[in-house]
Length: 133
Length: 233
Image (spheres, rainbow over the protein chains, first blue to last red):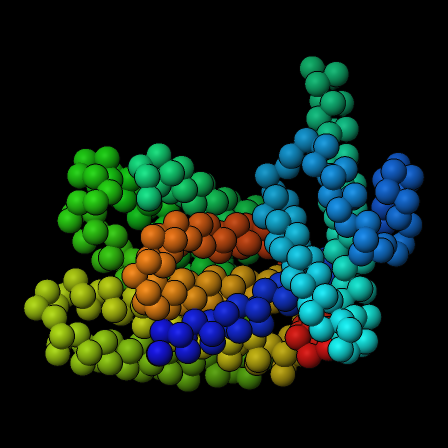
């Protein structure tokens, strides 16, 4: 019984930390302006839609992997799934939660687009270094 | 956990721990977050020690278990003081450093006394069991303290992005550990799953701290209230 209570408390604590952590990652990328190439490929200018997340993630997977941002992309992917569950479970009951979840999903998509932009820039630098060598 | 997977996770964790210190040195925040970096450096040394014992005696040997639990207790105490150093950073302007240090020592002594009181009644192999129990209790105390610290960050409107990310990462780490420990106590069948989860959780903290030191400039600011609004809206 005590183990179950501790489990419930720790999962609640985990969410209390995990959600703000993901939002802090997203906030750090919100000011980033996407390059024209990524804007053309993704169709995202300043605001993104949550439904584009899967498409942007597929584009992200096509780029060479950068170990530095792997953990953050996974964390945001998990956060996005959590938002999907929240939207499906509570969205119909409370429209404000649905609107909030949709906005957050859009911010997740923008984060993925920024990660794509960074990976494209990284690949370009790598190619330039190879050509110079 | 199979041998090769243990080695791979140990290696990954060690690399990430070393990366935290390298990033802190490069960003010139080593002195400011000295105890956190000391903890990561100790983790690297402990990982080498664990690797040495693992290759000589095997992962299921008694020596490895003793080494694991004693070193874990030591690391948990250092991490506890690392958390207190974050408290000191948050409450820097209030000039309460001395009281925080005294409070931290009293709380640690209290946790040790409580652990001793529990262990002395139920075990004949007292010292090892004490190290194991102390480690678990300190994880739980650490989780509660991190939660209080996050509440203080919100209340005091502390805007330093690096500090906010360090605190949140620590909260995720402590709560994931507490969840895994309680899950393993819930039913014996969960233990095998938890044995896979624990080393992976161990990599989360160095990964997020390395990212924070490497990516977030010290002068960067964000509003923690806006981050926490997610939970209430």
